[in-house]
Image 1 (spheres, rainbow, N blue to C red):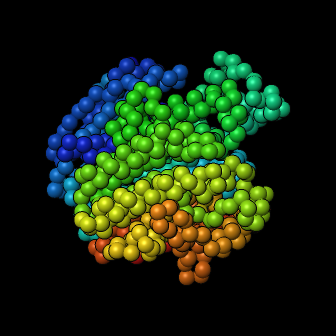
Image 2: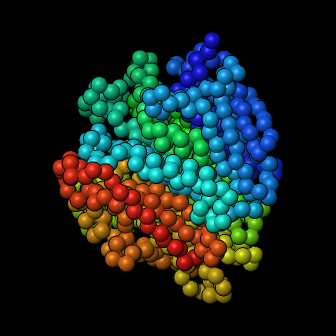
Image 3: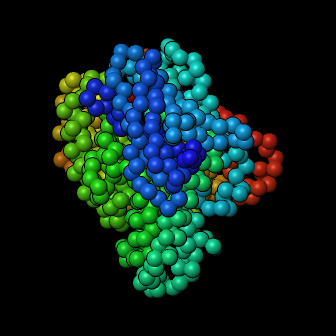
Length: 555
């Protein structure tokens, strides 16, 4: 008799619209004694079944994948599903004596505008930060679960803001692998060596296996300890892309000789292995731009209702001198593919783990010298406005403006970049300035940057908040894209003049009946952190309350 325990999952994925249907994937990790599994699902009165395909046999479990294709219809639909092993429902136990065996998700009507959720930074960069945090670590996941469950129960809805989330976009740092250098962890001994020895230290088979086990265990721990997170991953179709902490802090922004060392390459191999399985749900993901057994990058292109979505992989080939690598050409092709079948009223959504528009970074700026005590060099080198990435940033922005301009004759096309990484919430705008090359344009280019970070990781400490505010008070310089095209960059200020929301948060977005795109940040209203001794502050709090900030973009 096989085990019916679900070790990890279900993981529900969105892979876009294909052949007049919306394609979803369902994956899970079983115990090793499972030899077959089925996916039983119901849409309305129709009961269907498909077989899971084994895509990886791991040392401590088997990883399975199945697909659900829901035909596009004029009505919203709900899909209920179960995982069957030996004809019996598989389950997991989020709380004592409470088995979960059934899940449901929302599939919007073919012409329906949808509500999307966005989250990033699902973890802590250090054990110290974790132990000092005064709130339940999954507080905002609980909020998302409660909202989704309430909206599912209240269908049908009249306003899109009350619709269930049709997709959950996760913009990076879905796990934090930084603990690999901690005492008793695989690379502690290596981290104590002089640099010259680190660069050449061989990786034994035993060490390689310990590294692999570390990443596996980090996913299991990070994605199963919270019942709310587990609900969201099984009940809201997700699109995920990794950022540095999914590999190691600052990956791609550190010296080349270090990142090509045997030890760093062993880390990357294991991080990539489990990212491909657990976040992408295998290389058969229909959204991938490179659908091969060993893609060079994991950029994605999706069509989904009133959105075209381009997901940038800015880590797989990143170096100090280049962010996208071969992904640049696939990004350009993705724009062309979306443009070829663009529908009036659709919006372009670009997912970039690190925001394009944020505090102004300049190696010669006094603010950078001030902030060096808080941010390592690799953190500054992560940003698009860093000197070695500036031209690449300009090239991407130019392509987005060209995409927008080509479609302006049909309708005004809205372009958004959504990002995480920086542990604050914010928004800003790139606007194309009038000039000789665009004086005749009725609608000059306009790109909105949205930032939501992090859903678990806390905001910067109070002293660093002051530095960020100081650095952000510097006027953002115009961006000369060449050919007479100049962009002005503006970070939005609230009524009190603040450019950043220093609270844990996640965002959702939808287009309202007023034809504006509304972005709502759900965030903790606790005053956290305003003291360096967070533990003292935690003792005074019974628990966090939740604030709800609504930002209506005039776009």
